[in-house]
Structure formats: C-alpha cells, structure tokens
Image (cartoon, rainbow, N blue to C red):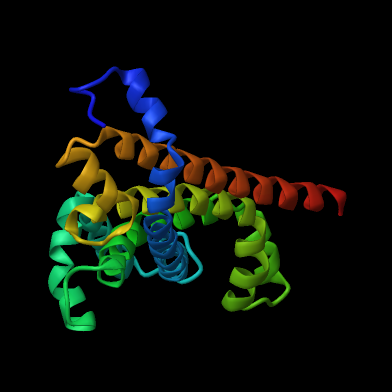
Length: 236
C-alpha cells in the first residue's frame, strides 16, 4: 500500500497485517544472522586493536610512538569512510573469500570492516579511563603487562566496554539495513526493494517497526548487563 494512494493511517494499519509480518520472518532471520556474526567479529578484532592502541600510546605500558601514530592514522582513515563506500570497497574482498560479492556472508565482511575501527576507538577510550595509580600499584608488586591487561584494565572497564559494544552493535544493525541495497538480504532488502522501489509503504513501515524493536532490545540488554555488573561490584 502506497502513501500516494491512501492516508498515512491506512498505511500504518496495513503495515500491521499478519500476512506482511509472516513474509518478513526470513529477512528478520537474515538480519539477526548478519548482526550477530558481524558483531562477534567486531568484538574480537576491535578489542584487540583497542588494547594495542592503549598499551602503545606514549603513556601506555609499552610506549611505541611510531606504531601508535601510524595505527591511529589508519583507523581514523577507515572511520572517515561512509558505510556505503566501505561496502563498495569490500566487494573485491568478499568476492575473493566467498566467490561472490552479494548475499549475507559477503556483506558481513564490509559490515565488520566498517565497525571495527569505531569499536577499537571506544575500547581505547574506555581503557584510558583507568587511574594510573592502579596500574602503577600492579607494576610495583611485579605484575607483568599481560596480567595488568587481563586483571586490571579489562575488569575495571567492563561496564564501559559493554555500553560501548551495545552502541556498536546498533551501528552494525543499521549497516545491515544499508547492506540490503547491495544484495545482502534481510530487512534492508525488503525496505528498499518493496518500500522504496515499488512504493509498498506498508512493508516499509513494518521494516521500521522491526528495526526499532531490535534496537530497543539491544540497548535494553546492554544497559541491564552493565548495571548488573556495577551492582555486583558494589556488593563486593
């Protein structure tokens, strides 16, 4: 149903039709799959890069000014690229790995590549909030760098890391919708192919509802986990 042929209220009512939602179960599954896999890749690589940035900065555990400067410059360059351009740039990489440049798996490469630099910076910002006194105390009792990272940096900043990861996962979700324009499938594909190209705004509205629900769930879970960790920490 198009807004050109009916009122906004009629389109909203049509978007709640169970038949439309039944059609969306497959795309919802594809969106969840892309979001989960891309988020896990982002978590692993973003966490590693963020830790490396933290320990190699001039005031870090292993000061490497040249390495830190070059790494920071590369990450800033990647962060400056719009998501759509990142998807286009990753097409050859996806084709090399999967043999094709479209589909959910192919677009996961672009989604992860776009969001990893952002989460790495979030990790770095969180870890830099640690009081230097705690690190110096650990060094004074003979703790090595790995022990400081595992036992002090990560546990102390865990609530902040979770909140940052929550924001990053929402960015991943929004990028899966954009990836629908490049044959990734999912909710974005339905919104573009039917809602935009065919003016079926009832399906477009249904896609919007789904994305809103997903974002609320992700944010709610992230807030809950973060608050629970802080609560348990205060009880100790």
